[in-house]
Structures are given as C-alpha cells and as structure tokens.
Length: 157
Image (cartoon, rainbow, N blue to C red; front, side, top):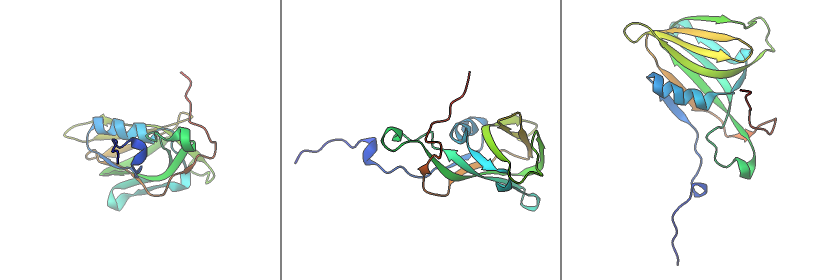
C-alpha cells in the first residue's frame, strides 16, 4: 500500500466561526463578508442586549473548490456586540423589499477601546455602530448553496 500526503480536497470544508477583537482581525472578517447580500428585514438591533445582527447571504471567498462545484454562498450571522447607538444613511428602512449588499466592515477607534464599526454598503449606504469595545463575530449557520447568479462577484476598479 502506498501512502501519499493529504490534499486540501481530502479535507472537509467546514463552516466559518470567527471573531474579531481588534482592527486586524476585523479586516480578515470583512474580506470574508464582502459582497454579502441581505434583505433589510434581516437586520436587527437589540438595544437592551447591546447587540446588532445581520443574517447575510455570504459569498464563500475562502472556497478553493469553485472550479469543481461553482460559486457558492452560505447564510451567516454577522453580529456586533457592545453597541451603544446605531445610525444609517442612504437606506430606506421603510422599504421591506430592499436588498442590501455589504462592501466592507471597518473600525474607527475612539478613546479607551471604544469607537465605531462602519458597515459600508453598495450604493452609498452605510450603517454606523457606536461601540463600547470592538467585538464582532461571523458564523455560518447553513450549508453552502450554489450562488443564484452562478458567478463570482466582480468589482470595477
């Protein structure tokens, strides 16, 4: 019997479950959430729990098997904790059919660990979360599914 080294294809691709407590980690999380889409109805702020959450349809940028099975998305929770205030611009919150596209998640530091988490959306929309401390999680909650467009998102430079 001949043994060979394991390859990536031999492993199971598992769901993401990541946390960010500093701007560098948030950059990684942001790159994995880039181009996620979500209906405005899947955006929730629980002021009493100081938690803001989005249920997003995340493009699987980390998927090395796209040539085998095509472009995939997965439903994921993007959660920001320690939220004191929420503000938005360029979003019509009265339109229940509005679908938003997430471009990036960044942190603007303030004093003593506080600051703002900025969710930048396509079409000049943005959500600004005032936080006592940076704590963001991204967790896949379903199995991957074929992207309805069948394509990888593209950006013009």
